[in-house]
Length: 141
Image (cartoon, rainbow, N blue to C red; front, side):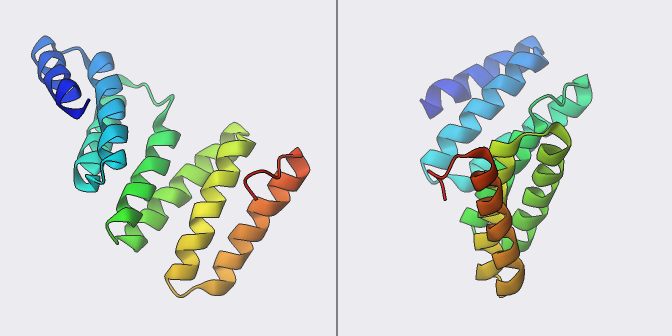
């Protein structure tokens, strides 16, 4: 799948089709993440955000910020990961996206604990649990 997306990237670049290029970057970033090719996933997501900024289409930027956080955490760039997760969380709060906000808080809590900030990690995890309880969705808790 990654090879097909790489071929598509080349085509969309040649065509200068930024929306299609964005969609391809998002998909390839996800495939690379699943293949543990985290540096490539980061490249794809950064390119996505750059294109999004160029054309003024930030509709999915918050999800890409979350994915950048997860990809950076996977390569041990915990401080960078936490910055991306905080940006994503801010967007999820603004959008009223409770499910994504909960997921983001869970990742933040785990990462904060790993970074030697257990008190802050606990706060984030408690917030995530509270949101799950409020929504009646305790499956991810």
